[in-house]
Length: 392
Image 1: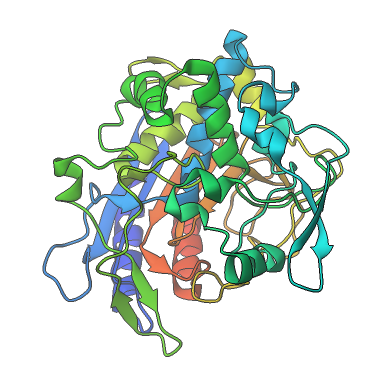
Image 2: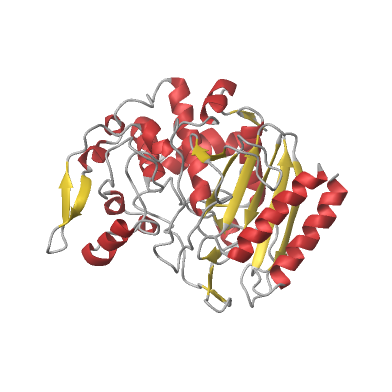
């Protein structure tokens, strides 16, 4: 099986970087409950430079950070320090200041009112609190453009103080919810989010190259983000980097990591909360978090409001998808071979992962390209996932 997968995946990665439009560099990993089934890479960390992409290349992982932050929150919940259904302001008081956006006045100022119910941490993990992102929401983009609302990638507290798009609990909207969940973790522990992750998640899993602030060894293996032009060309963004000493360690997007480290995190969820150097979560916590938490609600496609950063995006278009704590869940079997009930999500620079607890396999695909949902990246990622299932 491993030999067949290695041959198929190696060929796929080589084709992904040599095609037109291709990828500057890519790393892919597949794992079962016991360990890595495949780890490979192709291309270069920076287009036009000699350093090759390798399985230990360091990537800005953006929203694949979210599941790790959710894991930290779940740890505190199972220990009794966090009530998922208590007002989140109990732990992060500033979230109680947020108001609901009803529209804009003639002078362009936002019209706000008090929310009809409290935001809970469960709502944050489910993305039902009312928060959005300027990348995917026109009202947030207008606030950024006309009112100077800072984007979350600035790593500032001001970036978190955005209005709610609806009353908490009313629907699913992808946004800065998990950044706030990180603030809940900090409020309970009295530690920075990265310190909690290091002690409670990274150390037990053996994740030695994951952090909000890169070590010198991590920086030496860093891949750069590339901007895809309308003509398909790629340009390295030589100066773009997530803040390395941010005011807020953003639990929604701020980590740097590697495919190998993320594979260890995937195995945590495949193994009912057990890590390679100790248990992180209880099996019953994992089972609860891996279930649909939205009830009859379903997640919606993401409209690419800021075209330089995202295309319109939807995984398996037309398939019903729900959300757990905090992963997308496909409600039907996917054409790749991924069965219904699996967990997955993605990161802005075209990073993708899935966790199939039924079959006992998962995988990670890492590139560094804007905009999100880059067709070449998505096509090759899905081909890699399909190759994994065919090898089984």
